[in-house]
Each structure stands twice: as C-alpha cells, then as structure tokens.
Length: 459
Image (cartoon, rainbow, N blue to C red; front, side, top):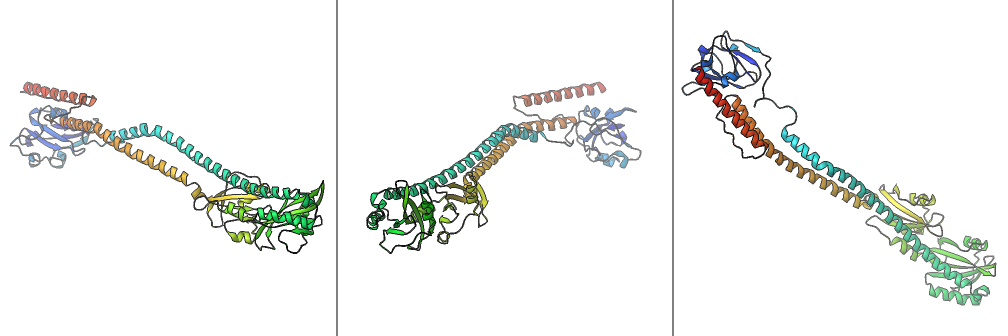
C-alpha cells in the first residue's frame, strides 16, 4: 500500500503483511507528523492517504499490539520504509501541506500583533500629545528664563540709575544755592559740610572755579588744583553731569566722583563735585545671587569694573570690555547671551545699560539656569517610560487572554487531524472563540459519525 503524508506530501510504500496487528503508527520523516496505518483498509493498488487512516477511527496501536511492531516487521516507526524494508520507496509529491501543530510559524504571532496594536492605539495619541506638550513646556521655561533675566538686569540697572540720580539731584540743589553761586569759600564750606553730613557716603564735597582751581572743601584740608580732572573739563565744556571712577587720593579706595555745573544765569562759574565711596553700589550689585552660580557685575562707560563679587577686579579697575556680556550690550543686544566663562563652563547672561552708559550684567551657569527644564524633561521621559511599561503589561495579559484559548483549540484541531477523536474541548467563552470551539466540537462529532458509517459499510 502507499501512504501519503498530508502534512508535507511525502509518499511511503508499505507492505501490510509486515504490520503486526491491524494498525500501526509511525512518524513522518519530513515533518514528524504521526501517521496511523490501518491495514484492514488496504485494497490492491490502492493509495492510502492520511485522511483515509483517520477514517479508521484509531489513533494508536491497540492493546496487545507492540508500539515497536513496525520496526520489528522491518518498518521504522519514525523513518520512511525505504531505509528499513527492501522494496519500499519514498518520493516527494506536490500535495499542498496542511496546517498542523508541527508547522513553523512565520512572521509575528497573534500575541505580538495584539501587543503592537494596543501600543499603537494607546501610545500614538499620547505620543502626539506628549510631543506637543513637551515642546510647549520647553518653550515656556526658556521664555520664562529669558524674561526673568531681562527683568532682573533691568531692575538692577534702574536701581543703579536711581542711586546716581539721587546724588546728582542733591548736587544740583546745592549748586543752585546763592551761597554756592557766590563762589565765596566760607559760605560754600558751610553748605558743603551740611551736605556731607546728610549724605555720609560722600566723603568729600568740593567746588572749583571755571579754571579747575579748588574753592572750598568739606574736609577742611588744603585747596587742590583739579584742573587736570576729566570730569571738571567735561562740566566746564558744557556737560550737565560728569563722572569718573577712580581710586580716591583721599580715601585710597574705589570711588565715584560726580560733578555738576555752578551757573550764574547761563554762565558756568564753577564746578560742584562730590567724591563718594561705591559701597552702596557694590552692595546693591554684588548682593544679587541666583542659585549657586548666579552673579552680577557693573562696569563704567570705559569698561572698568565698578562693582564685582571679586573685589580685586574693582581695586585693580579691571578692564572688562572684552567680556561677552559687555560686548553684547555695546552692540545693543538685550536678549540672552550664551558663552563659555573663564572656568570653561557654559554660561548664559543678560546685560542692560544705565543712564550713565554703564553696563549692568548678570550671569549664571547654563546647567543651573535651565535646571527646571532638565527636571521637566526627566519627569516627562520617566512618565512616558512608565506609561509604555504599563501598556505593555496590560497588552501582554490581554493578548494572552485572547491567544491562549485559540492555541488550545488549535492543539485540539491538530490532534483531531491525526486521529485523536477523544480530545476534550473545554471552553466557557461566550464570544467568537466560544463559537469556534463549538464548531470544532461539531466537526469532531461529524468525523466520529462518518467513521462509524464507513466502518459498518466496509464490514
């Protein structure tokens, strides 16, 4: 007889006389499908397919029949007959294979597809929202940082202007007094001492004539020639206010000298000036701090340090004209400036000009300035990662709930396909999977009835 494996199409020629008992089982060499042979169905020159063996109604050797009987008779249980019994042959047929438990799956399984689908359905809208929200958050934090930097620099610059303006207004008020306009030394000294007492940071208040010669002083010391001072020259030349940052000859400390004209009518008859410590300005500027690395500094119109957290810069009158923030302010750039500081740290800063053409600048390391942005990014990525993990877990168990019953039904169908009609199909599903299980059970009953009818007819 000739038996064809319906799974892979291999053909086996078997001598029924060598089968002990009525039935025997062997495994196909090509696909390992279990094949049951019933020699009672043998008819001369018949080709017996696996479907015919299934109709025999048996799945294994009966009691009293050795499972190794095919081997003892010269037919190996798991090999084609041509390797063990003379005269048997094996050839490949073109019969298309049918699905079975031994068929190798190609591509994604149903579990993978369900997980992928749930990820796409769940994450796609969330990913779009996350991307838009993340972009908006980044833009908002950067915008707030820029606004904060510009606001702080403007505020500090305005405070410096306010302090300077207060002193200038005081000098102008004194310069307008008749006692001062009189250019009389004794009358002026009374007024100058009163002004110093009112403004204690003015350690010296003095006047000069139009040539720069000292007329009166608040400290009572000898008169001095101030004709070489630039601020005196500027006022005599018509400036409404002049100033100079220097190391005071009297105090030997960083000082600011402010000067205004003394006029008699429209004629400049002298100069009213006050030398004052810059402690108030330094305290105003250097006490600003933002986090661990935030600081500010002030330079005058020539680029010399007026106030700085490193007091050596002020004492040395360090020229800071080459500083990126000073350059940016000179060019009119009021936006955020990014640069690498002297320590090699990436830094951001803002600069603002004062009314005296000084430059007030604030700076902070970029990593610290954008710490809220980094925290927001970390939180967003963490939340996204947790969301993906949760969805993967849910998708996995959801897919298993769908796939496991299908696999059980597939296994049952495979067992039925090799003749095991007693397999139990147990499912309580009330959905489409339950309908599929019921259909397989009806098919199982139909096969039993068909085998029973065929057996009675052949007998």
